Length: 202
Length: 202
Image 1 (cartoon, helix red, strand yellow):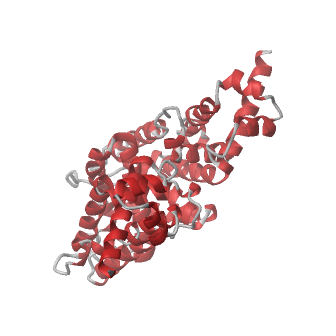
Image 2 (image 1 turned 30 degrees about the vertical axis):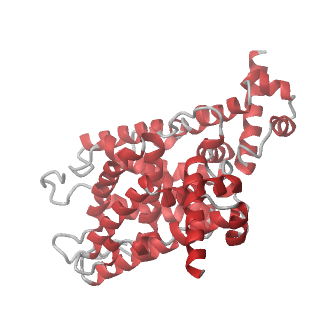
Image 3 (image 1 turned 135 degrees about the vertical axis):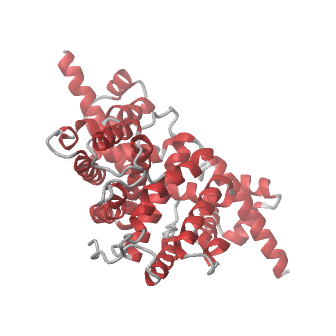
């Protein structure tokens, strides 16, 4: 029974995410979610209380926690800056292809019309990037001027802006190429100075 | 008469921009624009044909052309990369304070609900940044791996994402500080190598 309830929640969430990604929040009704999932509207109200509730679950439980789920982030055999870069490509791909991630991004963009306060969906992304940069700093693998938290915050916001604007202006197929342009522009600043003992750059 | 028509268009546009910035596109009606501007609804329809028309004018005629208007961009006595940085702070300030610029950014974010195709509002920003980087490249003031058009495109998208997300997550007052973090992260990659004759980084 517990298992059945979980399966119902999951299928409602995924149907809702598809619809939010395709039609936006205002363009999606509880009836649409019921029809797409093959469950009753009563199931939506029982499991998520409202359309706001299911939108909040998409952002909070899936979009906001996404980086924790990627294997690229956890593999300690790979240098941390490489893991950060790999993670960014995984997220970019999910933003282009995965309905739940796409729904999260669209709901975030449309947050003004959602009658529920969304959590900061980038907090965990930024925490993950901060940990990777701190690890790289300890290992002497980043430049002295890199302050993990501030750098992670700037990287995550710039990265998300780059992906969103590229998709909007050129389509999802171009995102990976533009991400490569951006890393070419950003990685040299992260790397430690070749001669090493330079004073901190701030 | 021509002059009076211009004044009317301008006051309608500015009233509409204030409302779009405060309440969003869907939350603003032609009647609201008429009330805020002190003109008739007939004036809105006469000068802009529709609410879509006036939103389009805000984005196309003001938001999209904004960088052309800034003195920081035009002053040839200042090195081009410095002008680019100054321009970014001017735009960031306008995004935080100027109602027409704020309206442009919000309308762009809400473009899915506007029943008119908005132009790419970043094309002229990117062209301005490309010219500055090309000028810097000619003068040997940027690293060999900087390709003006690709770099400008990545910079503009990352910059706009950084400003929008920072305002959404932390409020407009923080944008300038976060922009400084971002430039500290980005400028070292733009600078030419200290020893000069490094091979191109691509």
